[in-house]
Length: 127
Image 1 (cartoon, rainbow, N blue to C red):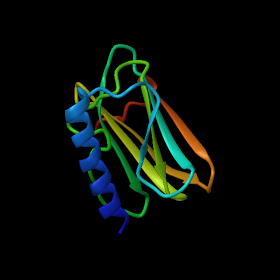
Image 2 (cartoon, rainbow, N blue to C red; image 1 turned 180 degrees about the vertical axis):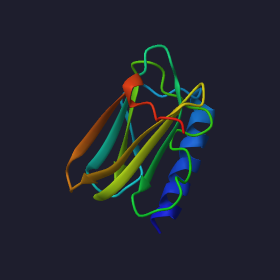
Image 3 (cartoon, one colour; image 1 turned 30 degrees about the vertical axis):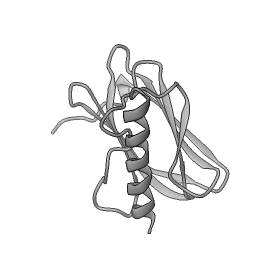
Image 4 (cartoon, one colour; image 1 turned 90 degrees about the vertical axis):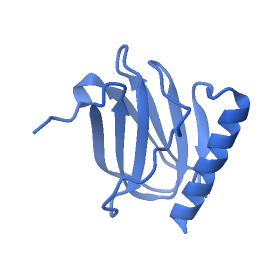
């Protein structure tokens, strides 16, 4: 059920972006869950733009859909906030060069906000 809500929310976001020029204001909130629990991602990658954001329950084996949508990005200094359900979450972002940055096992209780300021030091090591 949660995945259906996410898919519908992403589709609605894409439609709104298509009608409104595709750029969201800094610090907006995407409503994907039914609580006041939130994850906020801030781009502090210098001159690099974040092109993809994945937020997945820690129990899932896949990352699922990009939460930014096809026409949105997080430019340096911009942020985005998603309402989520309480639980344990994994986060991954991918920048314009395809580099990934990952946080795992983020535990959130109801009413809490987790802020991840993504920095170059968070870069995933390549094996």
